[in-house]
Length: 176
Length: 176
DNA sequence: ATAATCTCCGACTTATTTAATCGTAGTATT
DNA sequence: AATACTACGATTAAATAAGTCGGAGATTAT
Image 1 (spheres, helix red, strand yellow):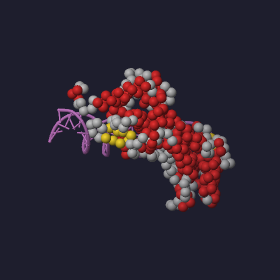
Image 2 (cartoon, helix red, strand yellow; image 1 turned 90 degrees about the vertical axis):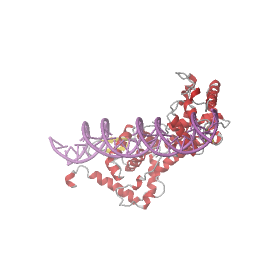
Image 3 (cartoon, helix red, strand yellow; image 1 turned 135 degrees about the vertical axis):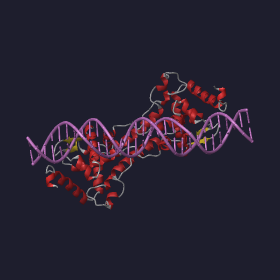
Image 4 (cartoon, helix red, strand yellow; image 1 turned 120 degrees about the vertical axis):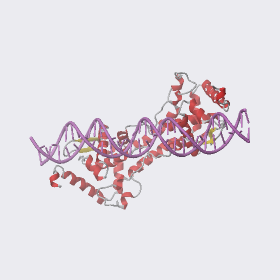
């Protein structure tokens, strides 16, 4: 297993489609999820979290969906991770240093003074990781992906979302 | 919750007692756990993992226990984390990029070529964190702690382990 | 205006992982 | 040879993550 869960992965992949939409057009969580063959409900939940974090804005209703709340350049990888994983720290100190068979009922003051040395080590590692994630943004990632994915497919994807949007509100009678 | 579990915390706190023992004397998992008021069985399991990773060496039998397999300077924080957490990566790529409603049964070759851009970002963050953990070792940590903990307490702790070791093999009849 | 369709959103269920425990096997000391 | 202690692997209990379900609200088409 890995430290980060699937939420981070799904969220970033999904955001890429908003970054590419570019013109500020909203795309629904349903479309984004189905295009990637992911659980619609789960992706929707991730978007909800990202909206609370201020990364995306939602539009309700028939032609609704999500769009980036700010330019892709200003959305860092760290922003996304924190949004969907909830800013969980690398390490949570349980203050083991205040547990000692030699202490009486109450631990002496010095045992809890300052930051635990082990905690400090982990805080530095955490900071290093976060700094790495903070210095990369969604726009960079989007450009990278654009260089790798064939132009034909990018166009086909765009068309798919376009068609999907156009079909909104037609009802089931036109499809079944 | 946090990324690292309690195992990392317990393991590092416990190793500090081995680093301080210094003279290569073995200390039992039981003593180390009870001194810190931690679960004896759980700490023992962590030591087992660390032994498999080659960080500590075990001695079985009545006067047995664990001691550092190499100088504390040569045991990095990363070594300990990997030993008890099992080298879990920061991110495990599920190759979402090969999932696409536009693809047929089999995804096209280009979709899985090279490293996924999102995965690459996470690999860099992972490397940053691991580099941070790798550059700090147990000896440094031990010195830091020694500067913070009163000398009186360090002596008392040493005595406790000493007494505990001396009492080995006396049986219950001398204690009850 | 009204009904239908689609959206977001929070509560719930299930599955996986972590933390801790229990029982067994083996070893050095007395 | 008996004993008291150790390490060690398998099992259980608690916590977390992943995914699901149903409802409330908004917008569009009729």
